[in-house]
Image 1 (spheres, rainbow, N blue to C red):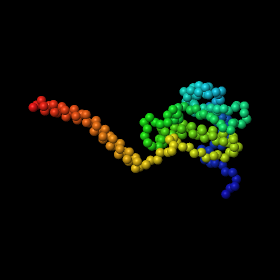
Image 2 (image 1 turned 135 degrees about the vertical axis):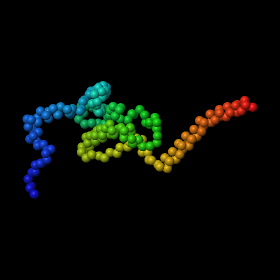
Image 3 (image 1 turned 120 degrees about the horizontal axis):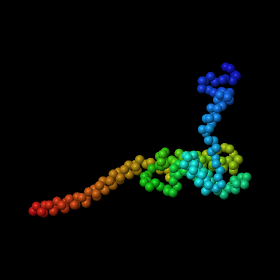
Image 4 (image 1 turned 45 degrees about the vertical axis):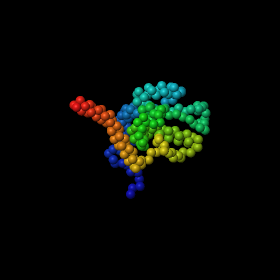
Length: 202
């Protein structure tokens, strides 16, 4: 075996020298114009953050805003307890003005499109990054800590097949009883009409 360096013979491989050539520089500069790497934008207070985020939401360019509370900008280290808020578009996360769906049904809130919006919108990932950064600053350790996230409601709903079967039976029984109770007034009206018709014939 040859112990020296091997060059890739793949036709798709691009050498660093080719990227620096005068022919590819204009193409690369045009491609880089499609990427916006300036993702962080500081603001003076939360009011300005909300105002700016509304404009960015209209352009579909806003992900999240972070508000650090009770933090002195001139301090060299953060306080022992760091409070922060994550502000996101309401379409990307769960609404926080209700703790239960209007049309509630027993079951785990595990629908990936309707229920796991904290995950789909990236809220939990951003919270994980912030918590990890704060912990690293306080402990001076780069080793990541394990986090456990629990989807609301807690404790998790456990699907019980026997209870679900009983629920279906009760539901069918209630529908049958309500159907019969709906028919009873009509039955009494028809019965009365029938008696009146027979009385007239006599």
